[in-house]
Each structure stands twice: as structure tokens, then as C-alpha cells.
Image (tube, rainbow, N blue to C red):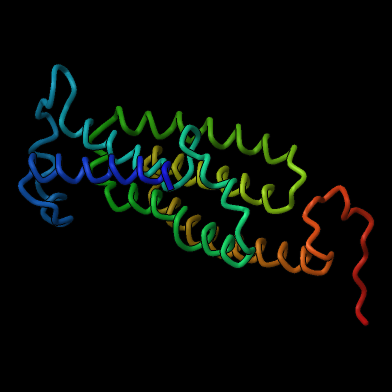
Length: 207
């Protein structure tokens, strides 16, 4: 909850800065005005559009569990498996990526923000992919896989491939929910055992 409150604070701050700068928070109006304010200075050499983008990135990174503000996602595995399936597939983790896609007209005018997205997501993909290979809890393996997959989506956004990010977002919602429900079925069948070292050699046959 505390980590997500960090993201909420920066997202709220981004909304305030957008309203002060553009006098509106309507998406259609913003998309029409953003090019007019693309060279407006906020502070020193920092552009207003860059500052807004950075605030949105911090909010999105928190919600989509990118490296640095990811701590809440692996720890969310303590809940029931169907709840984990919802968190990882349909609700929380998709919010950050969708925010970036929805605000793409802002990011496209900020090369700084696109660079941040690319570097941050690349590190996320690599680090969490490696960490997932060394986990023994079947649900945590899928959790770190979620972080890595979200990194791919953010990376696509950083490369201006928002359509690819949205496609993978929908695709990920389907297969990640199935993965968690399949893991839940295995855990339930094995008397609530989640350690994959103790699940080796099992063989299911139809009775």
C-alpha cells in the first residue's frame, strides 16, 4: 500500500501540473494543445512536457512494478491464487502501461521521457527475468515473470510502439490469468505445497 501511495502522489502531482500548464485535463484538448507547449520551460533547462512525463512515469512505474518500485508485487503472492490472477492479469499491473499508452501524445514530445522508459524497462526485463529463474515458489516465479513482461510493454512504449504494447497487454492478461489458475490447481492438488523442488516427479493421469 505504501509503495502504491508513492505512485498515486506523483500521478496526482502530474495532474496538477497538467491543469496549471494547459488549463484542462481533457485528453482530446490536451492532445490538440501539447505541441504548442512542447518548448515551454518549467524550471531551468527542464521543459514542462519533460517534467509532466517524468511525474507520469513515476506513477506508471509504481503501478506496473518496474524496477525500483516493484516491491509490492512479489509480496502480493501471500493472497489467494484467484486474487493473484486478478492482480497480475486484469487490474493493478495493467494500470501503469495503460497510463503511458493513453498519454502517448505527451511522451512523443519528450525524448527524455522516452529514453527513461527504454533504459528503465530494459533493466527490468533483464533483472526480473534472471531473478525468476532462481525462485522456488511457483507463484513467485510467475510474479517475477509478470514484472519482466510488463518491462517488455514499457519498452515498446519507449520505442513508440504503443500498438504493440497494447496488444501484449491484452495478450498478457489472458495467459497470465491462465498461468496463475493453473498454478492454483497444482497447489490445491498437492495439499497447498508451493515449493517446486517438492513437486518434481509428479505425474497426473486421468482416473
